[in-house]
Amino acid sequence: TRAHLAAMEKAEALNAYVLATPDKALAMAAESDRRIAAGEAGPLEGIPLGVKDLFATEGVRTTACSAILDNFHPPYESTVTHQLWRDGAVMLGKLNNDEFAMGSSNETSAFGPVVNPWRRKGSNVKLVPGGSSGGSAAAVAARLCLGATATDTGGSIRQPAAFTGTVGIKPTYGRCSRWGIVAFASSLDQAGPIAKTVRDSAILLRSMAGHDPKDTTSADLPVPDFEAAVTRGVKGLRIGIPKEYRLDGMPAEIEALWQKGAEWLKAAGAEIVEVSLPHTKYALPAYYIVAPAEASSNLARYDGVRYGLRVPGKDIVEMYEKTRAAGFGREVKRRIMIGTYVLSAGYYDAYYLRAQKVRTLIKRDFEQAYASGVDAILAPATPSSAFGLGEKVDASPVEMYLNDVFTVTVNMAGLPGIAVPAGLDAQGLPLGLQLIGRPFDEETLFAAGQVIE
Ligand code: GLN
Image 1: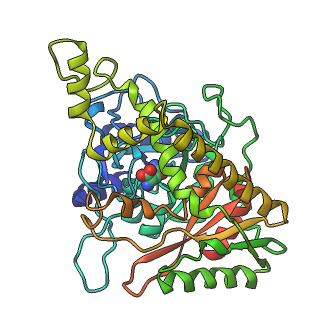
Image 2: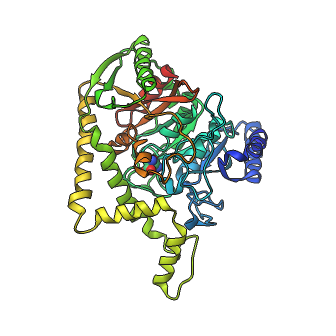
Image 3: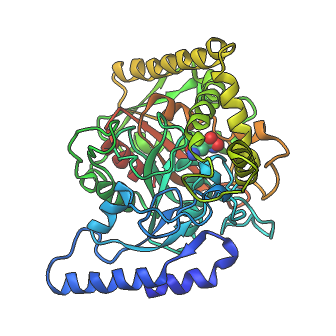
């Protein structure tokens, strides 16, 4: 814990942490020492972790990296973090993320961007770590924690993991409780870990997962021993390659890596088959209707009364307006505008309802692939490696959204997906491959992920 706290101080320029909690960390570590000496060690005893600022931490500032939650100290702990501390983990601090987890580069945070610890060969240009869990990914990659919590609504665990050479798993919707996690799009949000290795991510997920009566969408299923699945191998598994993921203009390196990943799995005993997910091309536009619609509804609660920031006005309506105008950043406002538009009476059927129908078709595509005997699907995690800071944010929101082309389908279908580092591109930057599994079959993802790692 001390070594990590010292490393965090030295690496402040990365801006991965928005709050360090050294006193709390040292007290938790001392308690771990005591439990170890008493023979009461939990499965994560003494393991120092970082927490995405989207998770409510009791008495510790939690802002979702938004000015509107300025100085909010929750009186409760999220279920996921509660379970990590129950199992002995130590909290180092709160990690930076895109404001309300809206973004793919960590550049929408009210605390400023996170810098990716990776650089292109022979260049000093600063790169983004991906988003929205950019702080989690950068902190793990720069060894500022042994693992981190993260959330994924449309790729926010898997894309930053791919951009930083780390492992990130978004479990099946319902596997981890959403209780105490600041809501973005409630039907898509899931928590999961970012870690250095497949095995570490399996160990962390086991503690994070499990049924929680406080979240009605939490699945009442036993949590498997994910760590045991890591060494299970892929002999006899059928891995599908979705032909619709072969995009025009995709870098040849990513195409080649994808091919290599299939060969590694084949060499380890898996059978590789082509599958079709015909509605893939509609996933991104449908996601960017469903997610803002749910976000606009979830964000209605920030009214200057209940949490954080309040900007006074001459009456309550003016107070609402001034608070929301000052408290929300540009991307969040854009989502509120899109969300309220697609939910409005005149446009609901044309946009929101249609997007929900597309969502059903996307889900059905996967169901058909799995019904044909495929155990998991192999795809790229991202359409490029990490890009430069400032290159895309605001200049082109749509170009930023295109980053999520391989990840959003998984959230739309509620499936588990893991991003595993698979190699470097010609610029020396990490590239990730993604495995997508059957509902509640994270174990196969750990087994296949281990073969690729
Ligand atoms: N980049 C996507 C978005 O901005 C996904 C974010 C996420 O998964 N939280 O909505």
